[in-house]
Image (cartoon, rainbow, N blue to C red; front, side, top):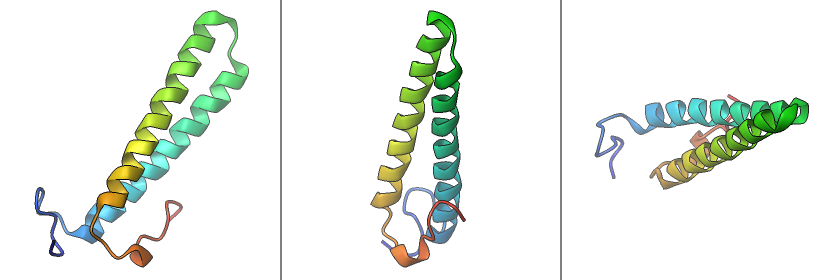
Length: 82
């Protein structure tokens, strides 16, 4: 694969930056859902919190798999905190 993504034409580094932002956002959503669960009152809030945790976790895992599939130089990745 070249420096361009075949399916989107987007440069790899731009794709990596976008994925990094999405992964960081998904991680925050997962943390927020877990925090909400700690303060949930009543069965409806607990059910909602569990659903939110599972959904956020699945999104985070999906984005990590997507990032790992990129044909890129990983030292350029820079982690999710940047």
